[in-house]
Length: 277
Image (tube, rainbow, N blue to C red):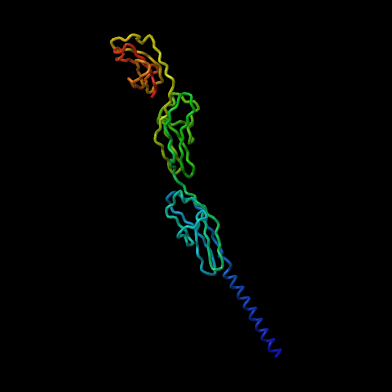
């Protein structure tokens, strides 16, 4: 009986050893988690082009896939290949995939998608009015990849040193008055802002000269004043220094202007003011 039990114990021990070897081989074959052979790679594509991320993995059993964008699962992205048919700047992100089987989950390395696109202006420049000597800035905001270049123009002429998103005048004068545009560009395109106007106002000195007639003649009262050329000026008149009314609007053609008020002969006295528009 003792010998019989010994033989049974030996036989059972032999089967246990064989079973242990088999289980060890099965564990090695199945593995605790999938093995990634090829990681997803970074991609750089043009706006509206196609982008593809691929992972290659191995496992002893069926695997499932789930792709993520910046840490959030992507609906429907459940295969070894994830494709974006028409990329936009909003797709510029970090992508990875989790591969799962019955024995565990493996996460891939991250791949970055870099979307290249032409500039787009997000905040347009604004027209401004300033007085002589003020510091004034015109600015534009734009988005682009790679980062854009800037070129400002004054009345359609390139300003050689104006190559930033902000154009600053430390102390404006009448020569800065005019229309400004900015071209925003990178290797993939360019966009030009609509023109905006910078208007610089200053002090007008109204000075009677020998060319003026202090007593109205048949043509009216004429006087001379100084103004920067190109400025629009308004002549206002009053008979009591309280109530003022505009009587003429003109654009200065020279540094000095002669103005005649033909209605002056109808008033015993009349006062004048000059205002810049």
